[in-house]
Image 1 (spheres, each protein chain N blue to C red):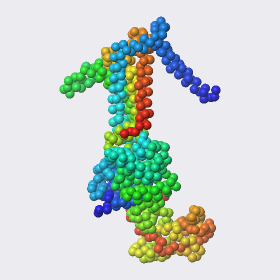
Image 2: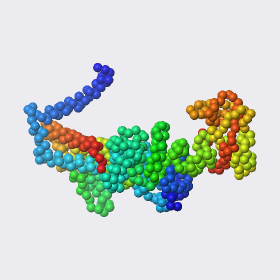
Image 3: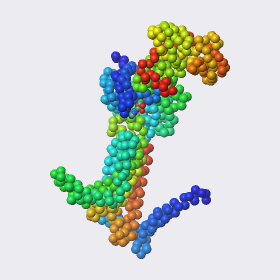
Image 4: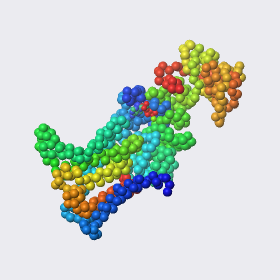
Length: 357
Length: 272
Ligand SMILES: Nc1ncnc2c1ncn2[C@@H]1O[C@H](COP(=O)(O)OP(=O)(O)O)[C@@H](O)[C@H]1O
Ligand SMILES: [Mg+2]
């Protein structure tokens, strides 16, 4: 119990009669880097705002170190937020921005000075103290926003798509820096993003959300390797997802072909979702594969070729280091352990992404 | 000359005809006697006790009116900020609506309300309270100018406050600022440009107004504007009237320049 710093207890929230968060339970451990991951509009920001105190849940409680803080206003929570963008005070210098929270806490001038110097160094902005926010790039502004939050030594730092407005290259370097900062300050991070790659690289634990419901929680590896439903599989990476029939333990039928797998415990002839990652499919001679189809497209992606092979009415996506010839008839094979078998979702929510496509 | 320069020609004519020439005429009257000789007399009559008293009273009304408008504007504007997009537009429209009514009509309405047998005392009587004698007092004039010029404060302040990004206000709260601190450290400084144009738009007309005091002051309480008006109409002393006008104009210009300059300085210093 002691290492749970924050607990969301059956939180629900709707706007204008539309359910945005549906009975959500979440425990966050001290010093953890938790990422809320999900498509835009799935309720990530709302969840974060409930933790920060900017929104009140309709039902449910927020517990901080076991104490109920559901009705506490943001200024009374020892939690700070890094907003998506434009949240620096434009009428103050970088130093004044960082000092804002400390002055409200009546810290001594020397303490504030030392903290500013420390924080600016931490975010690699040593010589920018006297600058105004409008003279800084987007990435620099976000660094200052992080410094401004961290100097207050919050118990939890909330980050709502803090890198969302930056270009890809900068985003990658900022991701590395954020991990470094996290290690240095030892604060619990709750991070929101819709970028699955960002979530996979940074987090200790990922909470995949869709339509206000948690779809799966776990480490990057467990989410990536063992998605629990088709939504998660589809959202994480560009998997092939296809209907299948579980003929018996360790044997699945896909497109009329029986293929060995490692999954057990499904009902006989149960309809299932089958997930196969593009990098796990191998292109072989037409007669040597489980499935036979025609190469319809090939794109060179730098490190590999992305090849589409049409088998009946489904286009398989394959990543291969070897090219293929468009129009050629080829076979596809797969190792049993690389086939993911999943129960069909019981709730419609898990199907959302498929419908949207 | 290129095409653009030609396009500006009508405006230049307009400015010359309706701004430059009248100004020259007024300055000429201000610095001459009735028979054409140069004099500073017309300007210096501002120090005549009656005139000076009117100047001080005008200043009191203008400063008071500006302050009251500021104090009334912010709570309203902050409340409007919280309304949804469409509703804030409706609220703004209702606030602007009186501006489209004839100014003298509005002031006369207040006369009806405040007069001894007016609507206000009627209501007080119904409520069993003592009647108030507000008509023909400084209070009546103050009510009149505040009512008249409040929209000119609300509009620019609203525009400035509406522009402040919600994230910035939430950031202040997030860092531990309560509502009052957030207002003084973030909302007020960030809406300063709107506030300053509001101050100019309220202070200048209330300083130079004469209709309001004419109607609601009962002719007993005089603003500088009333004295100038009388010099041009009743006394037909255009030289004196122009002299006082020029003084008032320069006075207003200096006080506004001072207000605006203070802001520029303020930006450089820290907000704490
Ligand atoms: N203040 C609000 N008023 C009305 N609807 C809102 C409000 N905040 C969020 N929503 C709605 O709630 C849903 C979830 O929003 P949000 O939590 O911001 O999603 P995410 O951050 O995952 O993109 C969206 O459909 C959004 O339109
Ligand atoms: Mg969001």
